[in-house]
Length: 251
Picture 1 (tube, rainbow, N blue to C red):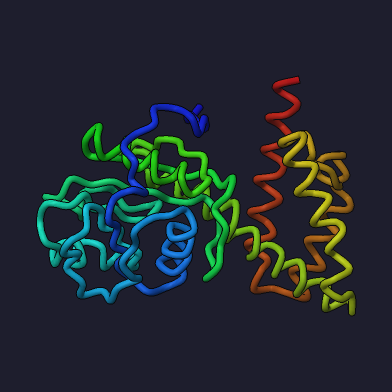
Picture 2: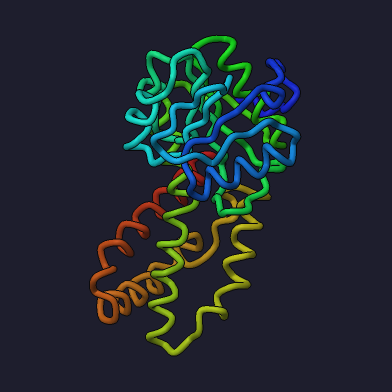
């Protein structure tokens, strides 16, 4: 399991250094505001052409595809970091590099208090700095190896992005029965709460009960009313059956 202990291996006082934030989007604005609130000397958010002159630490809050180009424009000598979950440290070379990926959705005024954060560093000093900075922002850092980044970020996307896609599917299908979206809210909240408490044991519904007759009627309704989502429904049924089988095998 990753180390989520916020007191583990505290590094240098990154907040006490001069920090430049490059990128004036939601992440850049949120991090800059949080660092200032923590007492840091912050420059920015700066435009994407910034060189980071005078900063001991430069944090790139730019789209993943622009990280390499932004890093190449920086004056050598500072520690350089990014906030991407899927991107390795390679685009930051030859700088001494680190990364911090808050495992949350970010708006312009996000609080990072209590948020888990994946950290990495190209040197022990860089990793310690990433940990220290995450902790000063109130986050709970854990390490993700470079070779695990794609899997880690895919898991995050499934947990967040795909959940919205699934709820949109449910909303669209419910609308064909003239059921409003808000009617699904208590069920969605209860499901997430139960999953947090019990994991996959929170699974309920016709597949969990082995009620294939109901699943067949559901499938027919989806294929009739939302044929463009029929393949997705069938894939979800298959995955849920597999989950049920694994639960029975483990019991």
